[in-house]
Image (cartoon, rainbow, N blue to C red; front, side, top):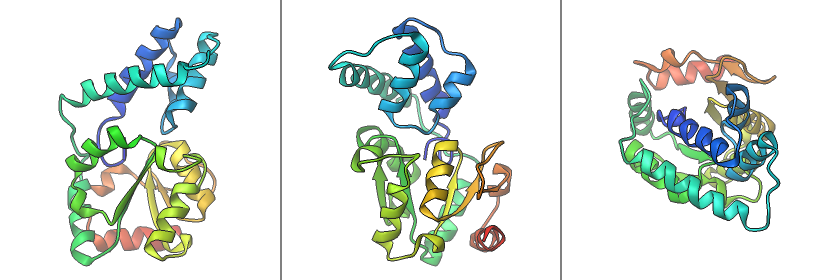
Length: 210
């Protein structure tokens, strides 16, 4: 969702850099890159390790409350869809293709984003706090396939983060990666290809990635 469907990664990035300041050591872009697409506990662990900060009991909840409050504040300035996304979603919805949002963002912050994208497009949504093991584990993609009654290999996943691409590939899905670098088993897709794309283009991408 974040970074693939909507342009919220810069906002998450801003809050993550601020988290580094809060824990006592500014992040480098390379450390921030490691957190993209991860769960909050994973992000906090990376930032704390970088800062040399030993987490105490209750810190995960305390810093989660701070982080989510800060991100909600940043979201209040508006959430924009990435170029081409609305047209692709509309074309697939008109054809009756079931679509899911699978995001490591927790439900309290995911819902305003899903509403901004258009909840009516999706058969269902799965968030990071609704699975035992969020991305890069494959669990949420396996669950989405199960809910729709499809084999993972019949499902196409579009992801922008290494964590997300790795999760979808581990689930056995066909994966299109919007990142500059992609894991093994993932096909690259230029995000600009989404602009003006329709359901037929999505079918072609799926076939080419098999």
